[in-house]
Length: 350
Length: 262
Image (cartoon, rainbow over all chains, first blue to last red; front, side, top):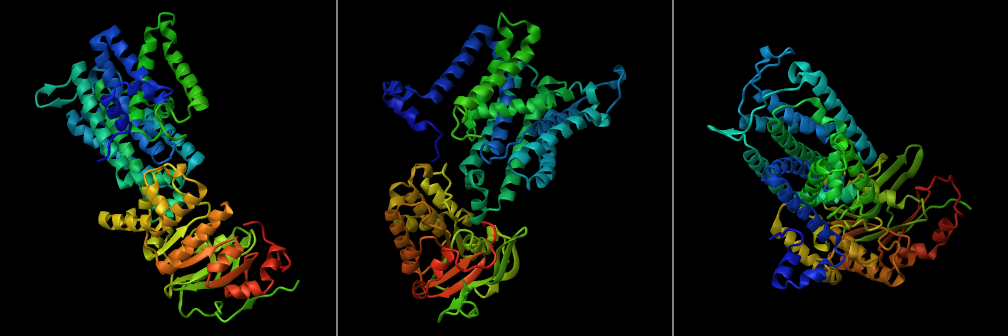
């Protein structure tokens, strides 16, 4: 049976707690884990359960994004900065299909309303993201390395412009209001706690699928492609097919996260899907570590803590919080690249 | 010095009969650079053929042409008497396995995982396990390190791993590109012994491109010498040793048009 990384160390410590001291000496991974989890606990205690619950929902969304992107960047070696496009596609699909805004009350253009329930729209959002990924992926498959970054960059820009300018469907900069909350029968998941539960259940599904992929022979071929695509071909694996498959799966999971995001905020506009968000997402993947699901969870948690935590720094005026977050994350990224390019718990360098 | 091309009793230039794997008048061009020019050579079942020559002679290009990794601009590759038209990823399924230059093992995977990648495409766990067991039996050093990461192995051990990975496909023909490159003399000897063992014991047809002339001639049944993309000698290993052909090509005494480094 395949065990999660670090399992042996955990069982060793459980058998003999004194071993913990020996194992922790100079173990940056362990300290990073402890520090981030401790920060999360302190945050929860200081700011109360309600805030922690909101944080949990945001964490779920970022973790889904981070894990799906890690399948492409970490496990397959394709540095995509265009995943924000799939996130937006998922979000807009759910928003368009579920929104029930009465536009006569607004002084802006109307878009068709469908009034679908969230759980009916979500699979469509996943499929739309997958279908677009398939079409885009067929075009992208011929590219590698730096060129791949550039073409995915192009995709992020194109998708943002579609969200902004395809007003007949997206209402452009006005955004879409009243996105439906998850609902099963008469049970509407509209409290923060319920939304967190939905977010974490979806995250669990994403973790499960990703764990299955990376533990399977399919995942092993992806790792081989990341290391040496030509040799993988020589041994009978058509790299382009594998890369396309993981790209589509990753985009579908990103679309799922987008759908959840849309429902959680109940309002979306193109500003949530700008290139900077994509860069932040890549930063989270690198921060946690390439080719590790646990690293993606940890990276997302660290990011959410950093993002929300800075809001409460007494010496930082509120109007600078947004910019300060980006500066801190940028500095963190530079420091990581200099001293720990494999990320907090990763094994591979970019 | 006069350009010369010699053949012996094996007559590989014209003897397509009985050849298992054969290049007939194959040319390869990378842009304007001719890497191979009308090269005809081959190997029969169970044989070990060596391709030798100085840097830039086109030795590795021979194997790449077979594997579909180099653009063949003229001539054709034949496998079991029929043109080999398959794409690179299909060739291993037809019975030809390639061990590339520089080992190129997957360093972030374990030894077992590397080996299993040699035949994961089979989707048959029992067969994969059977092949893994037989390869580990053939390479005791890999058995001892089967759970280690490939990156933790020495160059010689990685070469054994590359050979073992190539054998996992249970190939009829094994293509080896410079299997002793960068290895210490004692390890070179071990690698040649293992290649010889694979050829003798498993009756695997082997095409080996090699710099280490003495070592490879000791185990080869057939030898080819390339220079500047042209075949300048083919025959038995003895025929190579009896002539000065290798001295001539390595010292650049054959003349002819010089091509860029390949």
